[in-house]
Every structure is written in C-alpha cells, then in structure tokens.
Length: 88
Image 1 (cartoon, rainbow, N blue to C red):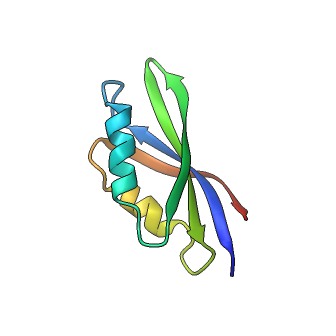
Image 2: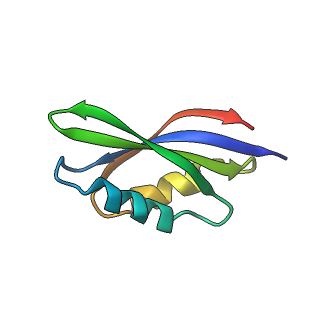
Image 3: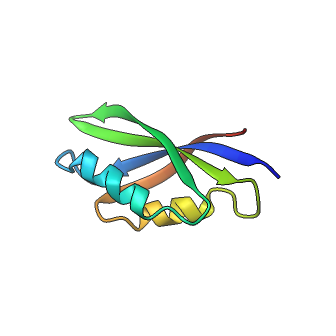
C-alpha cells in the first residue's frame, strides 16, 4: 500500500473567519496517519476565501473519509469537499 494525496476544499461559514486560525484548527484535528502538505487559498466570492489543504493519507479502507469528517466538525466550517485525489 502507498499513500494518497487529496486536495480538500474547506469553506468557512463567513468572510469574517480568521483563516490562519482555521488552518491551525484543521491541522489539530487530523486523524492519526494523515498529514497536511501545504495550504492554498481560493477566492470564492464576496470576500469569502476557501482553504485548500493537500492532505496525505494512507491508501486503505476509507480513504479521505476520516479527514473529511474531522474537518467538518471544526467550528466555523460550512462545508468540506474533496477536489481531487491521486496516488503518490
């Protein structure tokens, strides 16, 4: 088994959300075995900016589901969606 890299789009619930703080909280809730290999930011509309972390997870049962679930439980996160996935 190898690893999988997934770019995940994390939408904050308002333009006023501190993205640096949100980024720190996303790193804190990562499930065991997952790691973040960088963040991008995407201007969505009307001042709303999405975070796009690239997450590395083991290629096994469940894939990115544990990461998606953990991210969606973070306060001030509106939605979580996998943008793309690829094997390393």
